[in-house]
Length: 82
Image 1 (cartoon, rainbow, N blue to C red):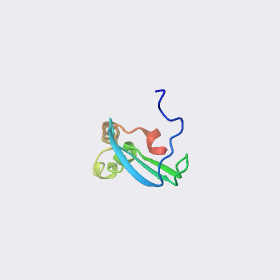
Image 2 (image 1 turned 90 degrees about the horizontal axis):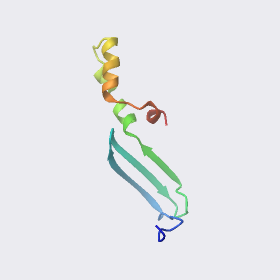
Image 3 (image 1 turned 180 degrees about the vertical axis):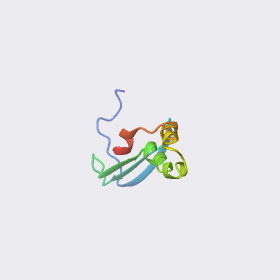
Image 4 (image 1 turned 30 degrees about the horizontal axis):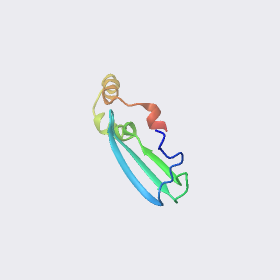
């Protein structure tokens, strides 16, 4: 740890990378101008993406089934709202 730089300066440009998380793909998009702080950073959270299929899953279902279907997707609303 002593040899780690105290300041990370990302090179100028943009990059998107993703990893598999417990709820799906977690993506990060970074735009940098070569300064110490990135110009833009955006997280693509898996709960927001997984929620997009909900309208198709609920076609023809009862209200009681809707609650069970939503629970089975394991959505974290804090991720969706961010």
